[in-house]
Length: 291
Ligand code: CAA
Image: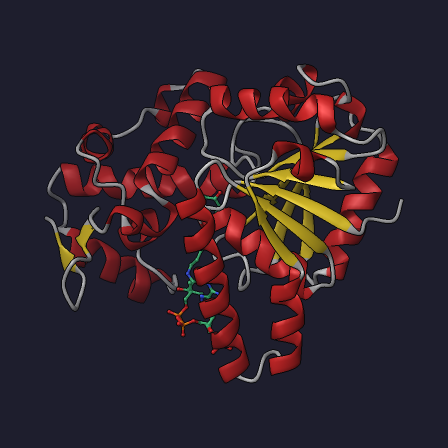
């Protein structure tokens, strides 16, 4: 099937990144959020990120302008649902996602493919509450979306082949690479990455190293582009905790228990870069470790 219009639900860091790459690839995007302020912030972020690509010669001024014109911010669920492909990229809470799908269902077109950018929740379970489990897929981008090459595609138990192929074609059009993952908790990337981050928080909690030494060790000792605690702040500590809980509940193995210190940071509302405080404090000129 030929996908031309894409509805993106949620204008946070993943939603705005997805809108960005889809618009650059020529898709008409309706970017939806319940908050006008979030939509304004998202358009601002897209503008800045595309400008950066222009100044580094990755895209032309004309491509940037044309792409920005293809993104329509909207608070209307009806408008967002009446598209060829919907990508839900709201907060990583199953009840929130379920409510969103419930509100979309009456307004979807008969052929609309419904997807979720969930980083860990069961695609089969999310799909089962909808009227189209065969047209439901996990469409999981990595952050920052404009930079990262990978998209995980996750079939639920009922997902049909035309749906998978249509989404694979979209990934190809974006110039990205798809990895096919089975529908088990946290799929591939987060099954491996987030327990590593959780282990880094345990390393901090047990006093093996401080924030700076842990990050430096993994950057210089394992050639990671970011240290695990810096990366946790970048992903969002609430998201990291939510993924650990999904792994812990879904696989019933104590090796996935979230570190109490990670829980404490989330309880404090220190969620990382988005709240300007996490394992680092971002409120000054330079990030300062909080431990
Ligand atoms: N939009 C557009 N371009 C961006 C961008 C954005 N939001 N952020 C960075 N860039 C571009 C820059 O323009 C730059 O481009 P050039 O190479 O053409 O110059 C390039 O990315 C590198 O950026 P910087 O020089 O500013 O910074 P850097 O070299 O420190 O790299 C980084 C930044 C790409 C984020 C790098 O630190 C990195 O790869 N970090 C790890 C990211 C990662 O692991 N992501 C996965 C997280 S897990 C996930 O997302 C799954 C989940 O569900 C939780």
